[in-house]
Image 1: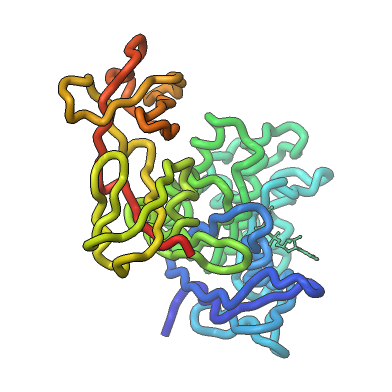
Image 2: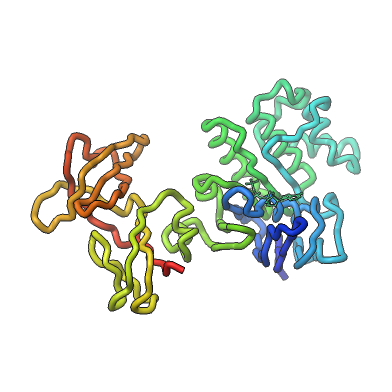
Length: 347
Ligand code: ATP
C-alpha cells in the first residue's frame, strides 16, 4: 500500500521526441517533492501526466494506491483528487474570488460550497477578498487565490508548476512559506516544478533532478548538495571549479592537495568539482601556501564571490563570508575543504 502519488516507469514521446525516459518516483502524503531541471527536460510533461492533462503512453500512475493512468486506462482529471496551480494564475477574469474558488465545487450544496470557499481563503490569508475580482488583486494575491481554489476541493495530491516565478522577491518568499504551511498542515502529497535550485532547496523534502527526460538523482536537498552522484547534479546548484586529473593510489592531485577517490579505479581519468565555498582564502604566510592573485571581488550581499588566478595559471572562484574578503589584497593563500570536492569519471 503506497499512499500519495506514485509514478512507475513512465516514458513519453511527442512525435519522435522522447521527453520522458523511464521515470519512477513516489510522493508520500505531507511530502513536498520538487522536480528540478533545465528548460525542456520534461518536468511539466511529468506533471501534466500526473494531472491527467496528457494521456499516459508507457508506465503507470497511482493515487493512494489506485491506478489513475496506465496505457489504455484513464481516470478523468477531475476524478483524480488532484489540485493544480500554474505560473500564470489562470483565474477566470469575469468571476469574483468566491466564484473562482467555487467553480470546482459545483457538486457541493450551497452551504457546503460557501464553507469550503471561506475555509480555503482563510488557509491562504485572504478572507477579506471574497468579492474581489482578479484585476483588483496583485500578482501575489492572485496566486494565493489560485492556491485556495486548488485547495478547496480537499485534494490528496497537489501539483505546482513554477507557481512563484511571476512574483517579486518579497512576495515570493511570503507565498512560499504560506504554501508550505498549508500543504503540510493538510497532509497533501505535493509535486512542485521549478528550475530554481534555491527554491527547490528551500521548499522540498526531496528533490528530483532531471535532465533530458531522465532522473539524475532523487534525494533530500542535503544529499544532493553534499553527496551528488554525478557531474550534472554536482554542478546544478551553481558554478563549480573544475580540475581534470587521474586516480593514483585512490587519490587525485589538485592544485590544493590530494582529494580522496577510493571508489574509482586507479588510472581512471576524472574531473574534480569543487564548490566555490570549498575554497578558503587566507593570508599568505609561508612558502607552502597555494598562492592566488585576486582578480575581482563581487559583492553578493551575505557573501562575496572572489575571482582568482592561481600561480600555475588556472582561474578559480571562491565564495567567502564578507568579513574574510580579500579587498585590497593582491595575493592570498587558498586551502581546500575536502567535503566540498567531488570526483567523477570523465565519461
Ligand atoms: P520548462 O522549464 O521550459 O517549462 P520542462 O522541463 O517543463 O521545461 P516540458 O514542458 O515537459 O519541459 O517539455 C519537454 C519537451 O517536450 C520539450 O522539448 C518540449 O518542446 C516538448 N513538448 C512539450 N509539450 C509538447 C506538446 N504538447 N507537443 C509537442 N512537444 C511538446
